[in-house]
Length: 333
Image (cartoon, rainbow, N blue to C red; front, side, top):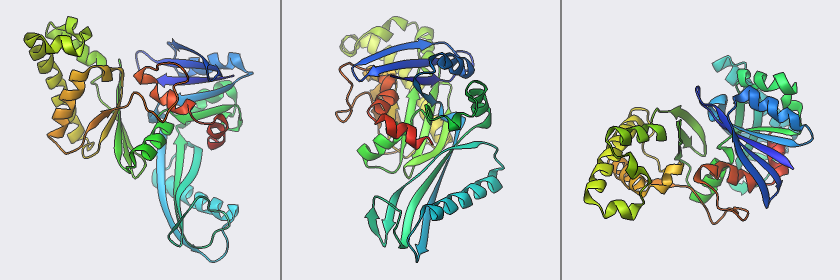
């Protein structure tokens, strides 16, 4: 048995979705209105179990390096560590960071231009991508107040909540560049993936609550719960709903342009994917700026849902659940 705690970061309404996994077919799910420290403290009551904390990306810093180097001798672990140390020193010089490294890994390995799965014991012209993920010192200290040095605890894994989703989409979409968009009740988060890794994380005050308020201001709140066919059959309802969503879409796409989030396909993870008028109008507005699309991500034939229909906002959890547990904990060390 192990627990997964998924953070919904908010200044006013922080909460965690908690998943207790007994086995793949028996999963208990509930929400707790707690901040990070309270969630960590609560988890310590279950000291016999492993814990995975899926924390908001704003608590992390992400770095990627393309390494191209000639090795006349076979590469050893010592050689790799020296490369990592050199890049860590470079980061410290440029950022003067006191944050802590939480994960390093590499991929896209080529030896004399031939693709390889592993780097150890290879030589000659070597290319690979090195990824380094830091966690903010403040966030780490909050966790350490309960667990001591959590980075030495092999029963606790801390990951950016979209980490495995980005890897899954990268392999599924076969695209180096795309954008992840999360729209939930009290936050809207945009994550830009460039050359298969995090390049920018930002937030905009256009949550689902904001759209709901727009419905209320236009006296059409009762249409929020109507299905697509019902609204299509009522010309007045369709006109009012379209006008409201159009204003939201225009505001949102203008923000994307001003903050350099255009020119990528956008993958949307949100309960709002059930609103097909919203998807259509947002896509049409986004299409005025470029030839890319906004695609809902609420299921995949490549993912097991373990015998239960999952909510759209559970996709990060579901992708994680499809990973081998040992792999999650080993990557975090």
